[in-house]
Amino acid sequence: IIVGIGIVLNIVLIKGILSAKASGAFLFLVQIAIVDVLTLLISNWELHYLFQHAWTLPKVHCSLYRGFDSFTSVATVYFIVGLNFHAIATYNLAVEIAKSTLATPEQECAEDSVTEENGYEVTTDAISQKRSLTIDYRYRKTRISVLFPILLVWFIAVSESLPVFLFSDVNDHQQTQQCAILTNTSINNFAISLLVIGIRIVIPTVALVITTIQLVIKFHNGKHFPHPDEVDENVAFALKLSIFLSVSYLVFAMQRLYGSLLLELLSVPLIVSKYGLVNSTIGIILTVCYYSVSFIRPLVTIIMCKQKNSHVDINFVCRKKVITAREAKEILL
Image (cartoon, rainbow, N blue to C red; front, top):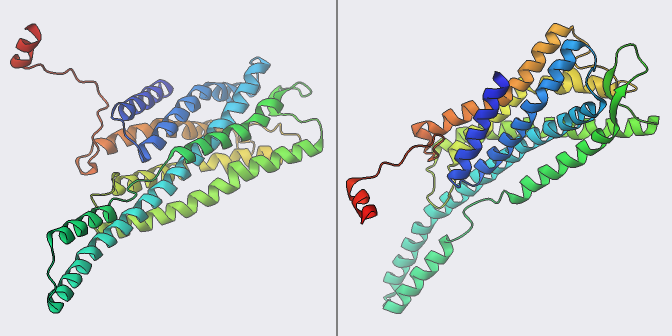
């Protein structure tokens, strides 16, 4: 039930954002929602694996499960980190524009006072030229591009998960079959372990913690200055959304990296089952917590978008257009 509802919520979120032609932080949300759909789809494989205490499905399913698990894990955390950097950059841009906007009137007043003291006459052409220069000065960069970061995250996710797709297989040499990453040599085992630990655990953990702290600080400081009209995005909403996604990942998903994945990578060969240090019941509970965040994320995001103080104009429910009598008459004519 949770899987089905979660997939529907993510599809509703994607459709609403794309229909509104939203940009910026919302494009990161679309990518995260797409990955959440894939995450929920592979949850059945893992839950079946945990309940059976062995891999009883075909071998090709093992490769798909391991590969997509790695792919979605990397994509999710890096898209959240990318959204954090985008929100921080948008905040810095808003602060810069707000400061320059406050400084421009003071500079113009100073120039006017100097002109009056010297007794110069300002002609109409000079005034027009000054106005045009002022417009050109303010017509600057008002948004942060997200295309390159999004493409970069997809590239990292594919590059990291490709070796997992290739080396994942069912281990037939034990009493119970396990779906694991099986390598031919110890060198390959060390290389894959180092790659996965670095990309899936170390880098995202450091980046997520640092950016989350910066987001909280900037969200607190952002209450002291008005939102400039030149910035297209809602800076406060982007910061608040990034904080929620980061905290929810730290609470629900970070335990999987250190409680299960790290143990799998440190074993030789990589055949330790999920959450090998705890009993099966706790392992199932932690697994459900990990996959439930893919249901919680779109639900809370939709609720945040519908709040009045968010100022987000996105409709997630299709509404029939009411045709007035005048419009109906024009259609008939």
